[in-house]
Length: 428
Image (cartoon, rainbow, N blue to C red; front, top):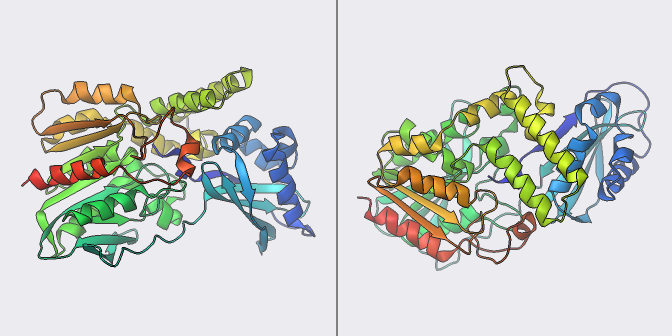
């Protein structure tokens, strides 16, 4: 799953009254200085009591370290909101660009900290000689429409079509991760080969206001993907009998579920799809990243132990605040996503399936690939392709996979895109 584009909401405690800090930017700068230097106790000492209770030191340290090395800070800007100064600081980590929003109260205390992905730069337009055009396409939904882009091949249609479904966390339509835009690569690569592709902003990216309180994986992903399939199939430029869902990472895990809920779907493409549950993968991913960074001592073990406790709480019967759970995501979500059995859903779908897996993927690993092979052995209409040099984003590289790799610009492997195009073409 795409760990780097989760919304890392640590806490935002409400405060009121008091004289406002004269230089809230200095408070935010000092907080970031402490975090960058690894002085977690000093950072925590700057918190208000509610903030300190909501964000234990080990959680703060784990979230900060998961972003990789802080490489650059931008200019801090502040504004007043309900008696609190909100300071925003652009940050460039090894894993990508983020915005730190620090809430500073009247006693120069940190009342909240929000780390969110920075808005991506606008994608470059298609080349002048492109064999496709890109047009705006809105995905209609009762909860609010989602903006998207449809890449349409030039020439005589109607065309077969693919809907792209994101991995975990807030994602834009290009699935921008670090310096890379895998959905942009896939959409334009398939459109060049005569296949229309719809990509849209994920609800948690476009409409974060829809996620106050409890929500489920269907609220976050499934329902919008089903709506996108239906809207795309109704477009006169599209062959409604040949519309496919292509999910990446968590989206791949949910692709069979999505295709089953829109029965007209011709088939499903599962790209870097977990065969296990997300909370089974999360400790494994963290162990890998700690080892890659040379962190194997008592402090690292304490972090893993704390994560295990959060996971147990997420799945337990007692109601637990989201701030005490992995990624600050509510219990309702974790229980809904843990109930998904991707392998069983794929076997029950009885539609053409294409599975794609990178050999250097540290987020969805060889263990998942072996489980998929076992689950779909002998299943009619199931094709499995692996690419030894590719990482989780479908980009070629060497050595052990890491978050730092995502900060280097690259492109989804041309052979992977060609294989998807060929597979779609033969599903008639």
